[in-house]
Length: 70
Image 1 (cartoon, rainbow, N blue to C red):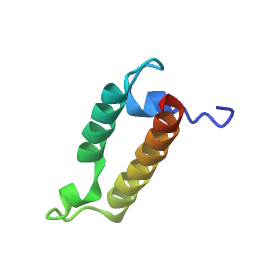
Image 2: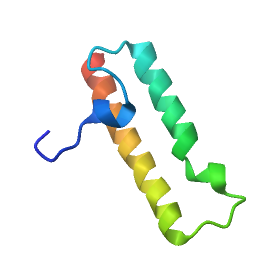
Image 3: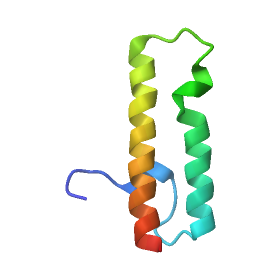
């Protein structure tokens, strides 16, 4: 969009992706960036904030793509 937020780019999927491809991409990224994955590691505050922000972006992107594909 005009703010540079491209949900397809964030989810690493094509605009014509199937519901299953959207879901798979979403779950893969959530597993990769979820802060709880790194709970046992003492991460710098900045890294934790980055992971949290990425997870928010992934969730927003999924909501946008999923709503449009339904």
